[in-house]
Length: 154
Image (tube, rainbow, N blue to C red):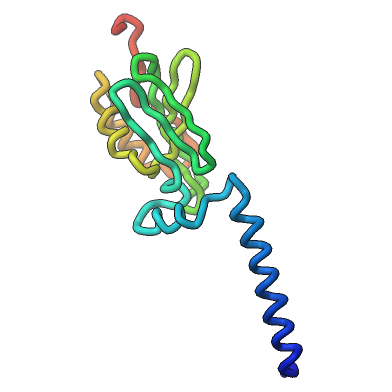
């Protein structure tokens, strides 16, 4: 057992080290903030629940925890796919891939707002729900085409 003065020194040193590490990690913009972690702790997937999908009549946007935003306009959408990987359950393993002629937006399934995105995607003419179901059953590295805009649809 340590003498009382050494015990106090060890506790103070440990507290300082924890404080320094906390400051380093909370200043890193790539890491989620503590309030973000608390917000998704109520049943959301992690880390997928740290991402946010916003669906409007004009476009879909996807916000990353670091503030980066991707978006694609509905009238520019040409293709909807789902990519599955074998990396789950500890990493995101299922992604929406929305593609236009000029950009691609990759969205982790399980992000906040996904239900509105799914509803909008399923309203696309000839959206393939069977491909969606097959993707949800997949635990390997695969790609599923759910929708492809026909050139004559305009």
